[in-house]
Image (cartoon, rainbow, N blue to C red; front, top):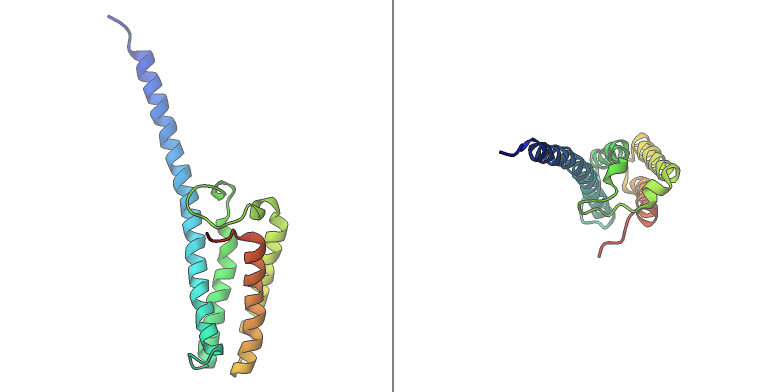
Length: 153
């Protein structure tokens, strides 16, 4: 009769390694999903602001506050979802520059945070004031997408 312990230990080692690999992949996907969800929220707020500027929705100071509040909330959370282990895996549009130039990425996030806070503090009371603040905030989106987002294809 042969000793099957070496085989059993090998199977156990492979299964154990697989068990540790799955949470790492899930963690990557969780971070990617979280940042995609935040960008979806940001997109909805941006769309609502654009509708006001196009005359497709009525301006109100409350609506302006709601839009800038949502954008600021996203700005404050977004940077938390770019761990090193989320560069690959899943369907992501995050550009390698995020991890290659972390100081520049952080500076872009800080600028977005500051500009969304400034828009909130300005508390636009008419569409012209809203347009000015919304323009400043959305310039951040454009710049960040150009530098830190892969083209959709």
